[in-house]
Length: 225
Image 1 (tube, rainbow, N blue to C red):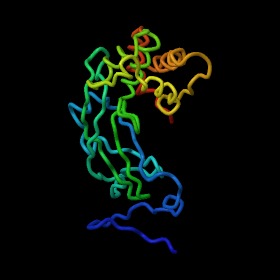
Image 2: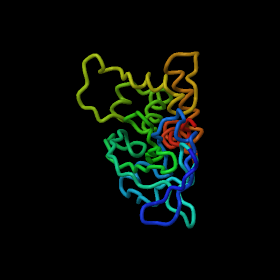
Image 3: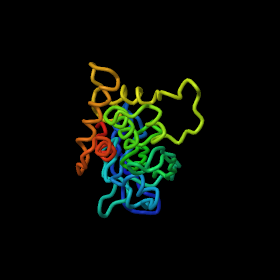
Image 4: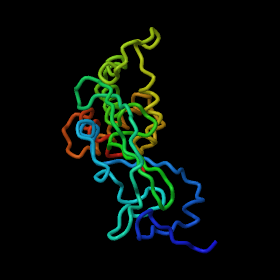
């Protein structure tokens, strides 16, 4: 099929050509894009459509805005999402509802979902909360019940879960997807979590000293690529 120009309705500026490889690729047409804004700031002062717009499409690499040309990455609505965990180290656990921003790439049709820096796809808890919980359990040697109390908003807990929290083991086993570090093979689950916590804490922008504190701030900075 010969290449054709695609025109924006009501304008005289052609959109960038859409190659067949962009349309027929096997990649998902929905991508998570992380903003530099943290969860707490996003919740109190949500970014505008223009300020949160990705500069490039995460699927095809098309520029979102070029001088003198129509927008390629356009607003595609808002979607509500609830994130659990404390908003700062030592704060009470809470459920924070935010409005994520969605965009559509007109070059490849992908939907881009822009979220705060501490949000992990498919997880209810923020990356900061998960890193904080693992470090409290593995490095500060708090019990699972104490960690749950500081991290989770759940008030009703079954009798079989009163002294344990399955999420800690699950997060340890999913460290590669969460933080880009493979779960160590040797040691107890708590010892493995301690090594993961140290890795995450090393990514804190400004080292504070205690591993749980640094892990909280380092979590959003060591996402897998």
